[in-house]
Length: 458
Image 1 (cartoon, rainbow, N blue to C red):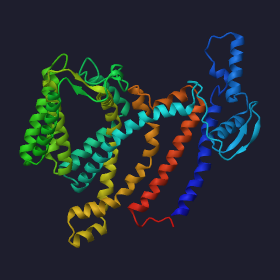
Image 2: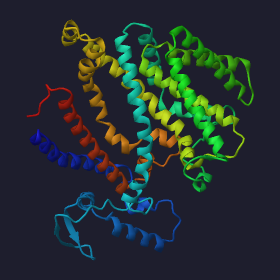
Image 3: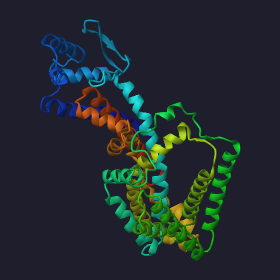
């Protein structure tokens, strides 16, 4: 195993060189190329000032050198080992550890590393919030659909997941903003950004005018969660009826909250929510039912208590940040959840019909033991393959979501770098993304051996 890991690590070096070389060649061969003239194009400058600025860019970035020299210069700066230069830009020696310099951005005039350090936490926050929802729901729905092949849950979830996966993220983002961040419908969420200006002056945690109101909110949330869990354990007919009635009531409440209430809209929303929430109570999957209904009950309890409070409420920086992240996280979650659910269902269904599963049942093992200790473990390989892209995705971000909601993350930074031909920034993002992609594939290969003992790299 150690020999395999070392070989893969050594192969990363020529692979990364090839990736960055291709990207650099594409940028250099594009119309206009990368030159000092392209950086100052469109600026109304005097000839002398223009010439001085061109000389400055040529001196700083070496743009007057041949493309091959430019690439080697960038590679030498980005590599921790390489040649060192004196004040006159002449080679003064070679160092095995001179440090890595990703350069200075053309557009921002700041070190690339500083820009990346500013944007990475934002993209990490979006992904850390969305990934647990994606994998938890995908595994739960996919496994349940496989065990109930051809039944109501399988057919209904398959149709719903296909519909979710077919809707583009761009369209979903626009619709969410149009319906839930617009004055024409429900203006419940902000349209863009991660915080309001006022939130920067607020305390970190939310607080109320009195301790009694905070205690009331806590009690209401716990009571709501308890009611949801209790309802999840009730007989199926009772819980489906109560949840359908709750969905109908919420639909009419949403219709009444519109700037211009309409009976047809209220009725449509009521029927839709009755089907969705009632469907949560219909499923036999106890873990999924308890979790979702508990969260639903806690949310309703908190909402009712917040509406009934009379004191001054300050949402704080934390709650304001979460309020801004609801719609972006929803956009990042739904398509990945739909894809992974179908993938999980296919993998589990294939292993449920395998010979070893039938042998385990013949030996008298319980169905849950066969499912989770044998079938599910062997079904992890496709999920591990998909998970190999998670590591680069944590930093690459979602270009579409960050652009729609005006979030200053890594995805938006990459788009801006390409649009402005910011060579230093494009090559640095390419280098980091390529490194994380290769590391993700290596980790996935190691996880194969952990999940399946038949996989060996010796």
